[in-house]
Image 1: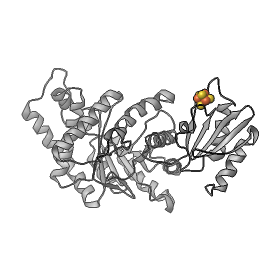
Image 2: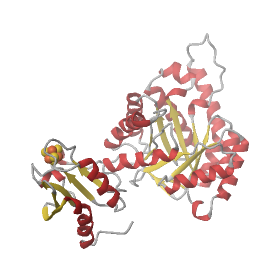
Image 3: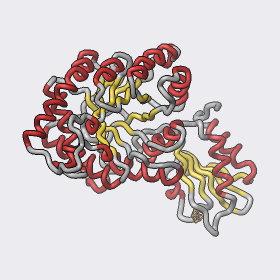
Length: 396
Ligand code: SF4
């Protein structure tokens, strides 16, 4: 019998080509890659090298560095030298913030990927009286872009390096704005123009992003991009992010709303959560998004009830204790439930359960099977014993 698609709980990721960024591959069915960006001045060689190390140590798989000038481009060579041998494998991406081709060509020697922003390739002076571009003006500028971009494309192609075409809603070129409006379509057309230039030079190590600070705009842009790529037989991986998401709880929720929505639709091969906080704070958010969607499992999955009037112990406190004792056991699912009123199935088939049974006592479960009832103050220690008895324990 044919499987009922209504019962299909797997995310079917969009088919994309693999793009190598140093030792990491984006797309091609590889796990969604987590990345971030240091906020040190690239001219601060020691500070930048330390920041790259810090990010890498907590799981950032690709690190981006800003390159606003030629001095910054040269500084990246020194940063690479500073990084000890074990860190030299961290793929680095240079963010080139304008169409300074000399800078891009210099930095391309030292990094694994160059990010360019099509909106910054402008050759026309903004004029307050102008409100449109004729077809020939539009094409003329397109030709200038092609000529400017060509040496970088060739250099990256010949070195087997990658490029991100990173469109930002907030910095679309004027001719795109006038022709397509301040819209997802303008963003997608911007990216497509650059993709076509790269393809004409037989260069396809491309990753595309279409970030916006408003989630609905970002969602529409990525979805339209996928549609247009499908129509054109393009299979480039996508880098997802919500720009200027801010900080704190809302910054995390806003980023998640955009990134997770697309990932759940199978769209997205690498993600960055942009927070107005230390870059290290972005990495756990990325991994939590991926874990929640079942795309990557990098930590213990805790299933816990919200507690209610039936709760037989201090659930918040116990969850903290259980987490403190077990959070290093990657790969396990552990449930902490105030009671078992509706049966063990509510523990979502966790590997282990810690469940309120009667005042002062809790029950420990292995899967759906109740293993033993113990006084509450011995609960965490007995849970550890049970995990040890199953040979699933490792010391922290
Ligand atoms: Fe309340 Fe029990 Fe449900 Fe927890 S599992 S919320 S204690 S009824």
